[in-house]
Image (cartoon, rainbow, N blue to C red; front, side, top):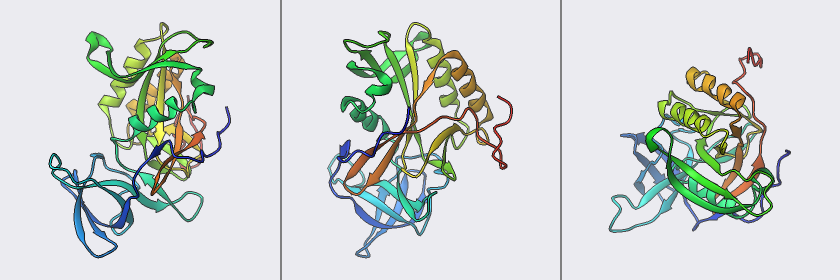
Length: 265
């Protein structure tokens, strides 16, 4: 199915974010940012991975200010400005706590109905897999008139790494991600199994597994496709006032080589 147009209203709105310049990221969970008024603040960094391509000291970032007695830090790093594949710059969502909320809001707004069908119910963090040792991000119950009455198990992966306009996941070896693909295959054929790469930048036009970072994940990704796991890469545009749905992009079965070849399937 072709891309949907950029939604006019944010699927997730937020209070205006505060801009500054990233000075450094340290201890994985912390980012030092100089605000535009010259104030130096320490912000929480929810993304514990390598942040390939989006960790740019000296680059502009956006923070959320949320002081609370229950929080150690009043600031949270939400977005980073990076060179866009199409020229210029674009803003990327870097808070890994956001994609599940973002996709839930997108589904509840009916924006994914062309791919999911009508949804009557949605439950987060439902135990499943071998011995119920895994938790699915979202479990959807089809609504009246759905062409496929099976429940839909939805696994969500935040995706910010790119090669040109191609979005890639993962950007490092992820045994947890490998296990999630295996768990999704295990629910078939009694249920639909759906992997949603949350493409947290609007400059990408397709998605592929990050074979160069995790060959095992890439192999399992292709095994999952062959088994019937569906992949629905959802693209989002990030702004200072919220996040907008920017459509669904095509899936490539593997990461192309430097000459653009897909190699053996």
